[in-house]
Image (cartoon, rainbow, N blue to C red; front, side, top):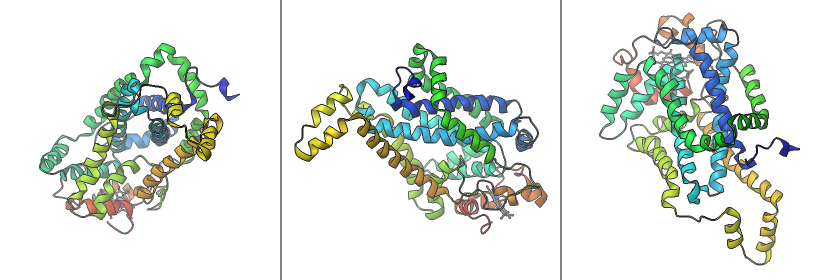
Length: 387
Ligand code: HEC
């Protein structure tokens, strides 16, 4: 029954890769809609976002889809990566371009999340952009230069151009090497149709979330409580993980290592794995036969594993556990992040100062607190205690 929907020549093991691709297409489509209503200026950005949410027909749904898709995309990419890793795709010399482009794709996707978080220019976007220079300021030697680079060059239109043009282009080029070349040969519409059908359960979940869990943008009448939405996944969670050292390791030299160098190192070491790990050229099945000629209980175990269904269930459970582990880390690191709550204090009814992000971005002499990473992290996590 399921095989009827199974995309041709595409094994189920690429299900989550296909799901990620569908999510990227949907993100493009919803983004294209938002482009027509969003205004990239300090004074009007959030006003136009509010207008999209509250006045444009279908705008609220589209905006919230555009916010929820990164979450599902992230999970799809995570499962896809773990499965490829367990399959040891990195040791398959024929697949090394696939592996390289797959890992590198993470970078533009992350940068898309970062810029997408900033450009609505409500309090979260503003806060996040204030953190960026501080974050890069911790890099040894060139830190101060990096910091002033981000301070001097930031404008909303520039980051908007990165978000709608530069990073999507990089994503497209990498995706072309990663899958589009092959998909085009097979017929792209066929591929999309079949994968969309296979992804239906997730699409239904996506629409359900976008309708029921919306980002409040109708201030001040419907201001949420300060910590409301604390357990709801939001794009900023992925970054709060790397920012956490700021909260716990005050002025430690380890901060840039843990939050900048280590993640980058892991990324590049992973990306080039097939180039320094010379693995077998043979298929998975051959190496499987070759390695496992054990006796006794191990033989029974391997006979069991050779049974396709048992094997699928076993790997399914392992993949689910590893996914839960990583997703759990992100959850634990960010569970206090008030997805909705900034609006409860930072809305226009509380006066100019707290109303909308100030016009004087970059003017840290007026708000010295903005140079204090620790204060900013604590205000993010415990806004009702630290301000
Ligand atoms: C409980 C009320 C409250 C909540 C909730 C709250 N803030 Fe604040 N926030 C304040 C107050 C009060 C100040 C002003 C401090 C001052 O005047 O120096 C402030 C200051 C700031 C500043 C410094 C800029 C400035 O103008 O002083 C930033 C940035 C900020 N908040 C971001 C956020 C973000 C992001 C959130 C949501 C995660 C948030 N705040 C949630 C009360 C709150």
